[in-house]
Length: 114
Image 1 (cartoon, rainbow, N blue to C red):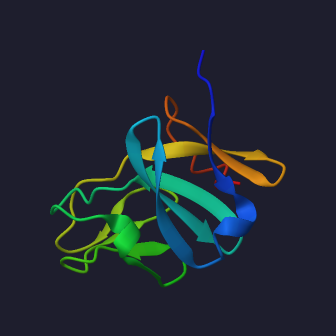
Image 2: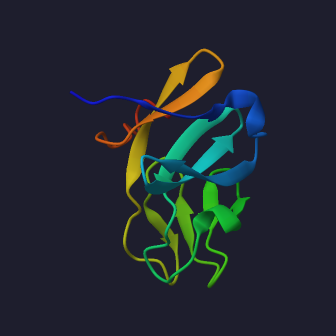
């Protein structure tokens, strides 16, 4: 049985922003896309880069700060060259004013985060 891990209070991450968070030794990029929170691995799958240092572009894409390749935040799918390998996504859990993550469960894209 998985145990959700607390990440931040919702008010700590403004819409349109991304930040690096640590969850039980796992580095994640946490995104606030128009009030919906998503979590992916922080490391770019193309180059050694922290996606939390990138920018959210075109609404729901994260641009890698090294080569400007992009990923779809909700699904982790690569959307722009040179990125070709999907990001690992994590299930984000709404707990009132807190954001939690389940490190053992992939995000359900249909659920769209919280």
